[in-house]
Amino acid sequence: MKCRICKEKAVIKIRRHNLPLCRKHFIERFESETRRVIKRYKMFTRNDKIAVAVSGGKDSLSLLYCLNKLGYNVTGIYINLGIFKENYSANSQEYVIKFKEKFNLPVIIYDIKENQGKGIEDLLKRGRGEKPCSVCGMVKRYLMNRLAIEEGCNVVATGHNLDDEASRLFGNIIYWQEEHIEHQFPVLPEENGLLKKVKPFTFFTEKETSLYAILNGIPYIRDECPYSIGAKTIKYKEILNKLENDSPGTKYRFLKGFYEFKNKVKIENLRSFKGTKNCKKCGMPTTREICTFCMAFENHPFIKSVQNISISEKE
Ligand code: AMP
Ligand code: FES
Ligand code: ZN
Ligand code: ZN
Image 1 (cartoon, rainbow, N blue to C red):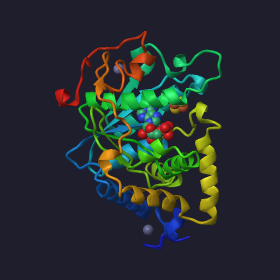
Image 2 (cartoon, rainbow, N blue to C red):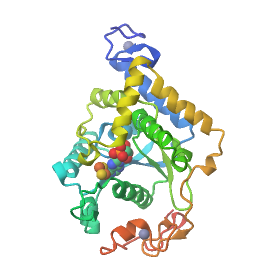
Image 3 (cartoon, protein in one colour):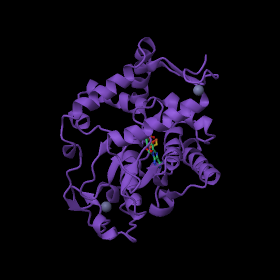
Image 4 (cartoon, rainbow, N blue to C red):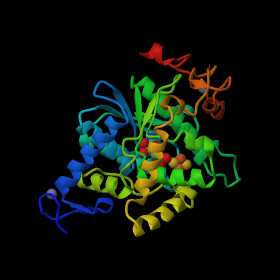
């Protein structure tokens, strides 16, 4: 298989375009596509300071690497969630440190057990076989936003890819989760203490982001979180991959068509968060007196620098 552009040996065939590419032309296309999506959805410019939430996986580390290469002002934020099962948090943190040292990029490492006194697994009610994923999602969303503000960033970028987003959409449609469908988009505007959130890799498949990581020598953790095993989203990914195999481009058309349809909806209405209060403990936006994050960690208050924080005060 030869590269369509230069006839050198191809490293991948982008099936939805029937396009074989060599290493050089794959990387070039990947980076120019990233830039195009950032502009198309008005995600950020070189004047913004972007917090890239990194998990130690291929998508988010590639995103940090790629945005830095494209000349954006980036800082990585890694949250050690305190997942001790299969040593998952410790292992993923090791990859983040390897990455940081190899490419000499700024990455903040925040350990919730050290700072809050409890890790994700400690927040579960004992002996009920409960999975931490929903509380983990809440903790990640909260901390990504708060740590980004503390670092003086004005945008949060995550590494969600086409497989993540298409499977999420699929699940939301099957169970007709109107509320979630309403707020799924590659860019969510800044609102009331929540920074703008963006997903620049929303149109790249997992295969493309992992190839980009490999070709650039990015070290990344290959294991998934042990709690994600058997998760419905993984089943949806398998179903979509079957459709994709029969008809390349299905995943892309499914998600892109949805975004185009949504473009008719006003972007200002995309935020799910309608909180108007500020948490009495940490000052972050909430719909209650005390936010869900502070409730979860209630025995370990951490009200250090952030008493009554507001974005305008920080800036
Ligand atoms: P996941 O929910 O694990 O599929 O991750 C989706 C995105 O959330 C990743 O691409 C990262 O941008 C971000 N993320 C996941 N885990 C972490 C973490 N421990 N620390 C910081 N960001 C994370
Ligand atoms: Fe949060 Fe698996 S990463 S529960
Ligand atoms: Zn080529
Ligand atoms: Zn709070």
